[in-house]
Image (cartoon, rainbow, N blue to C red; front, side):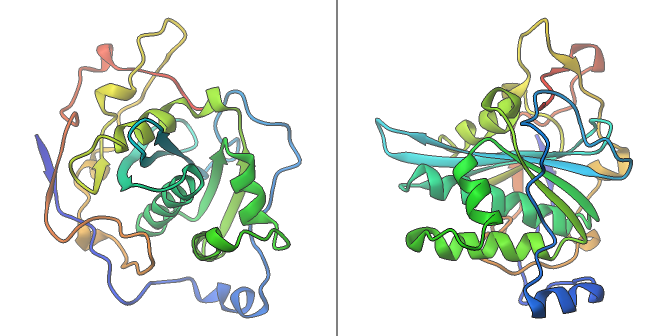
Length: 249
C-alpha cells in the first residue's frame, strides 16, 4: 500500500492576482473548442495538461460515483481520483467529478488545462451562461468559478470511448468504501488488456512525493479528501514493461 498525506481544504485559496478583473466583470476565460470531438491525442501545446473526468450511475442500486485523471502534454500520468457520491443523478455525478478534477488542478498549480468531457449536456451547461438548470445550478456555478480561476483553460466535448479511463475510475467510485481516493500511479483496474493500448509513462519522481505542504489551499464544495491519511489501493508500482494504458483521445 502507498500512503500519502491528505489534501486538506481550508478557508482560503491562492489565486493569480491577474484574474481579479476577469472575476469581477464575469469574463469567461474558458470556451468550447470549435474543433470536432476528440478521438485520440493530447494537448498539442507544450506546457498544457489534460483533465478527463466522468460520472457513473448504477441503476440497480441507485449509487453514483465520479472519477478522472490528469496527464501532462506528452501523456505522463499526473494524478487520478475517484469518489463515492452516493444516491444522486448521473448529472450530479458528472459535475462532482469535474469539480474534484478542477480542484486538483488548482492544488497542483497547473497553469494551462484542457478539460475533456463526454457529457455534452454538462459541457453546454458550464460554458453557456444562458443554460438554465435550477437543480444543478449550485454545482454548475462552482465548476464555472473553478474554471475561471485557471489562467488558461479549454473545455472540449469528446467521444465516450475517448473517456475510457475516466469512466473506469468513475465506475470504481461507485464501489469505494472511502468517500474519496487519489491515485498517484495508474491503478490496475484502468489498465485495459487491449492490443490497441499505448504505453503509459510513469509519473515524475517528485509527483510521487507530493504532500499537502507542496499544495495551495482550496475551499469549495468539492473536498479533495477527508481529514485523515488514506491508503491508495492498486497504487503499488508496476514494472514499466507490464504497464499498458488506453490514452484518452
